[in-house]
Image (cartoon, rainbow, N blue to C red; front, side, top):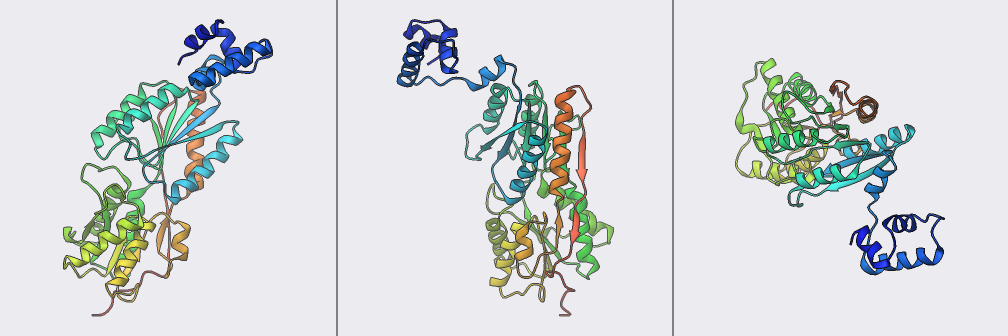
Length: 353
């Protein structure tokens, strides 16, 4: 049902329908009641996006989250809402499930039709296929709406289409691994490796940082110590950390004195698998995570981790997006924010045996 069809049914002009649906005072009350009753009967829903476009309103910023909706993204979102509200903008949140067919097309359609003042992609976006994600980024670049990627880079390639703000995953993982090496560990397992095409996703950048630290210390990289993710589409979850570590241990692999999980939640899952295997943390094996979530403080023993400065990431995202909204032709910014290593009680020197 379109506004033109509803106007024809009611025998009035399109402008009259529009004024009636917007509760304008210049419409006869009886006519307004009749139009609203017909709209309900025939299922007509006003196009809010078109109405915003007509009156020139772009005071809403859209935030998209795809797939996993973890604690880290919730914390960043809370800071974003405050920053944008302080600047006079409303925030609307859209969650795109991984089960959604053609989620890339869905995101593109929402952005095209929404007429938002700006868009933030929070967390990962697109598909596991890097080229498909790059193609989505390029398609989004054709839409005349300022966009910023938050906690994830722009995958479109060397000539990025959009600004991005993210923690320095590579540097953080390098620091964590170097910390383990400084405590005497040489056999360090990395928990949470995904599929190879995801070379620029968080897990891949952290794996690269892990490998760089080994190389810095002259420790040979051992492929058998890379624990592959076994839960599809849930790399950064407790379940994946648990099941991946459990399967790795059950396969007969051994000899790791420390486990570097791709994130704090995966580390907690890995910790359970280690305990069930009869290993104590940190007496038998050390364990570290990444992100600095509250849950890491309440895990026993408290996790050693890299704390993501969520407030700084959110503030930088708001700054860049608002500046781009004011000046669309401004230069692209790729901002990498350094995380902070916080020592817990989950790391000790490897056992003498």
